[in-house]
Length: 211
Image (cartoon, rainbow, N blue to C red; front, side, top):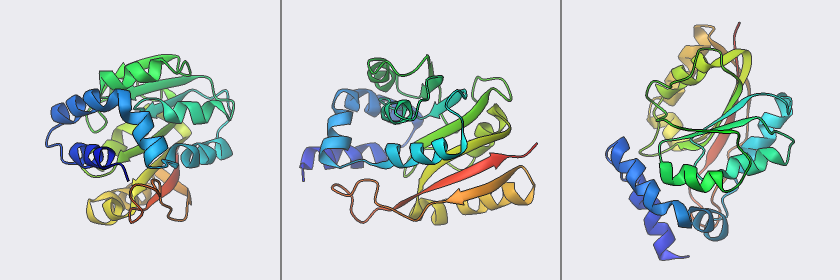
């Protein structure tokens, strides 16, 4: 295990504010792909993209919320998606995403705050690795729903411990009870970073926004 890579992940998790989180991602941006893919074996982008492709047509307008360096965009391109918007709180990460040439638009915004998009903008939203320790909380789901068109899909990964302990379970169930969205599918739990954090599990969640 590369101790420097492990330290970077814990360093980011420990951020106390969105400003600090953004700054730390800016500093990590150039080494992010190497650390996540080569050192940790990061498989969540491919896993979530397969679920999106299962329900959403390739010509759909898709937001990658918390796009980071664009690894989800690369995975979606393999499924034929080419109308992608990258949104992230870190300009440094978005710079790396631009270099991949898979997105049409780039927006620096913070998941969990108001998003500067019109209501019903996107056919689908995907968010990978953002609903984890020290990152977007359950309130971020309200904005993702608002900017997704009726009957549009929202696909996201979430750490299983964060789901049960940080309010996501209650929030997701509340949104179902209020008939705001419907649960379509949940993956089995899996290790998104099998080489780096073998004891951490995620699930992929698929929801469809109600009319």
